[in-house]
Image (cartoon, rainbow, N blue to C red; front, side, top):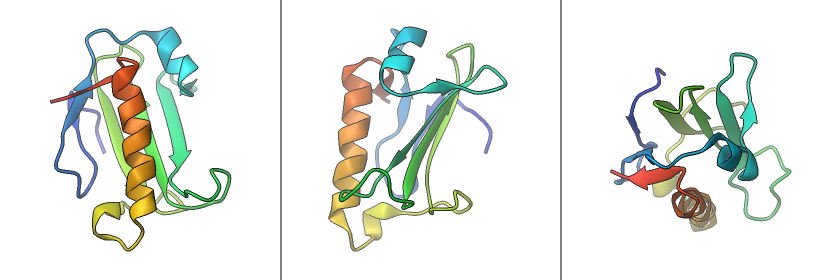
Amino acid sequence: MPMTTTATVQGDDKAYQLSPEIKKYTLRDVGFTPTKTGNFQVVRSLDPSSPYQNGIKLKITIDKDLKKFRMSITDPNGLQAINIFKGKNPDQVEQYQYFIDNLIERKVLAVK
């Protein structure tokens, strides 16, 4: 999936964009780590019982210029996109919203 200026996850009715106030040090503060290519990436488990279990994951990658990004919710292997909004586990949706709300509050993302 290519990086774009606007992204959404499967099933979410909201689209997100990078905040104009985004800073590299804020990315590190909220858990993003630099990749070998210089991009920033975070992978968060959406399992409400334990963030350390190998469950459904939210993955966000931001390019090194802080202009484009991509986000997806994947299966435990990270190979297939999953729609948690039609699933049977509302706790996963709550975990997703909590993390996205934190990124909006910290001025990493903005609602489009």
